[in-house]
Structure formats: C-alpha cells, structure tokens
Image: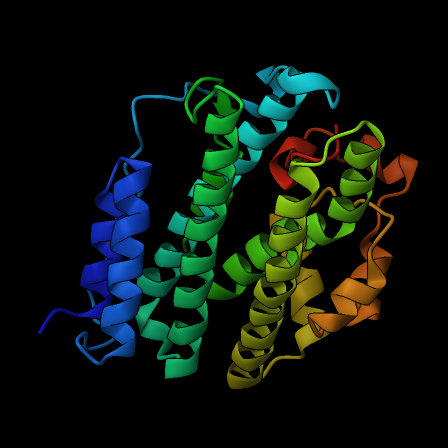
Length: 286
C-alpha cells in the first residue's frame, strides 16, 4: 500500500498546476478512504517542481501592483494564485517532512484539508484570470514563500510559527481592508474570491496554532515563550500592526503572544536587513 508521504511527494513532483491540483484531490480522497497508510517515510524534495512560467524574481525586484482597472486586477489575482500554488506545496511538505515528530492522525487530516482548500483557491483565481484574458504564468512572481519553507525545514515548530502563524495570519490582517479597497474601486469580481480565501485562512491559522500548542506541550516547553523565541530566531523583523484581533481570536491565537512583537519604527529600521520582506507576507499590502 502506498503511504501518505508517497502521495505527498507525487504532488510536490508535479510541475503543472492542473496536475498538482488533481493529485491533491486524489491523495485526499485516498487518505479519507484508508487507501494510504501513514504517514510513511518518503521525504519530500528540497524544492517542489514548478512550471516553466512564471519567472521567479527576488521579492525586492517585483513590480509594484495597482488596484484599479483590469491590469491591476490581473496583477493582484496573479500574485494571489502564485501564493495559493505555493500553499498547496507547503501543506504537502509539512505532511511529509517531519515523520520523526510522530504526530497524531488529526495533524495529517488538517493539513491534507489545507492542501485541498489551497488547490480550490488556486483554481478559483486561475479561472478569474482566464475570464480577464490572462493566465497564471503571464507575470513574474516571487519565491519568498518557498524560501520561508527552506528556512524552517529543520523544525516543525518553526514551520508552524513562520507559515500558518505568521504568513497566513498576515492575510487575516490585510484581506478585509483589501476587499473594501477593491470594492470602492468598482471591482465586483475579486472581493468574493478573497472572502472565500479569508474564511478558509482562519481555519488554516487555527490548525497552525493548535498543532504548535500540541507540539510545545509534548516537548515540555511553554507555548508563548517558545513562539516568541522562534519568532526572534526565524522572523527577527517582528510583525506589522494593525492586527485583525477578532479573526486571530477565532483561530485560537492568543493576543498576548503576538501583539508585543509588533514593529516600532525604530525596530523596523534596525531589523530591515534581517526581516523577510512584506511582499512575502501578503500580496495585499502594496
């Protein structure tokens, strides 16, 4: 019988987005039906396969996006689609990269569902691009999300802190204002898609928080202390306020864990060269 990590690695090895999404649904169905043993010990590749396009640029070299008109809408949708494609791989990577942690079945259930959600998000955004006469791959994209994965490949706790508890949580902070701004500019297409992603992201952040707390309890360390230690080590620039406290609370994310990590101007300047760029955090900030 194939293992879950075999299926995860097959998704990661698929370069074309359509195939990556198709294999994601097959793997999820096989896991739910008991056709995969798990989790298995097939380790994922260092980097997932990617299509020939889009061109990947350093985040600092990415062109600035606009909000108005079809050009701005295409730019935003393309950036979002790229993030969602990366998010599929991030979910399968976390499923297969840390077998030594001996996590319970619920951990794998949660991240497989995240992978399915991200595949649906990508397909939804790609369809919107096609409706505007564009396609995924038409514009350059940045590699920041997978750089975050590489920086946390050694520790499941660090991965949970940086990816769902920081990068996806940032989406909770920025998405409502983005939807409002787009609607003010007359965009009736993009905000509904963002609303779907936003509500799914609450569940994704909740999974990150839940399994981080489980892991720190198993390791016998205080959750808040370990979260802030890992943030200082892996995300030294701190966080960007304002925060969407109600959405973070829905995800079970304790406000006193993260609020004191908000960047002051002095701290932002001091850590400018160390922090991951805001382009990595969200396509909505620009």
